[in-house]
Image 1 (cartoon, rainbow, N blue to C red):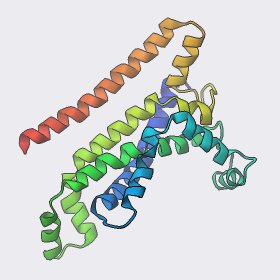
Image 2 (image 1 turned 120 degrees about the vertical axis):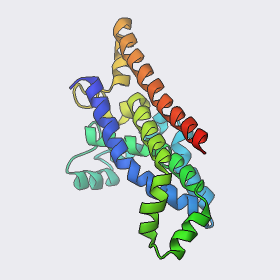
Image 3 (image 1 turned 90 degrees about the vertical axis):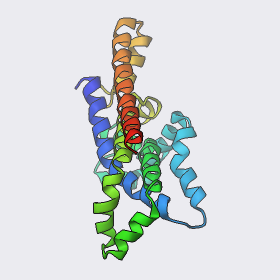
Image 4 (image 1 turned 60 degrees about the vertical axis):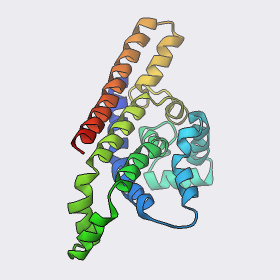
Length: 219
C-alpha cells in the first residue's frame, strides 16, 4: 500500500470515529454549566499545544506490551497497538480531538436558546429537538470539523512516527515518506509529496472558508 493510501485510510477512519465524538462532546461543552468546565475544555484542547513527540511518547508508554495498560489494550484489541495501523488510528483520534470538538462547540454555541426552548414547548423530545432543529443548523460545524480532522491527519508526523513507526504498506504515511526522501537526498520525490499535501491542505481550508462566507452572506 502506497503512503498516500495509508494516509487516506488513516484520515478516513479518524474522521469517521471523531465526528460523532466531537458532536456529542461539543454539544455538551456548549450547553452544560458546571464547575471544572474550564479544566475539561483545557484537556480537550491540550493536543493543540503539546508537541506531537510528547503525546507520542506517552502513548508509547501506555501502548507498550510490557506495561500493565499496554497488556490490557492488547487484550482488548487482540494485538499490541505499537507499530500497527490500529495503534495509528487510536493515536490519531487522540491528537485530532480538538479539531473535532472545537468547531462543533462553536456551532452549538451559536444556536439561540429561544429556538431550542420553542421546540421543547412544542412537545419535541431532546432527540427530536437535536434531529429536527439543531442538526440542520450546525452542518457548517460538522463540515469544518470533518475537513480539519481529515487534513490534519494527512500531515501528522510526530505521533505517527513514534506510535506507528515506519512500516512499508502499513504505517508509512505521506509525511514519513517525505522525511525518508529528504534523508535520502531524493528532493524531487519529497517535493512531489509535499506539493500534494500543500494542495490538499489549501483545498480543505478553501472549503471551510467559502462555506463560512456563504453562511455570513445569507445571514
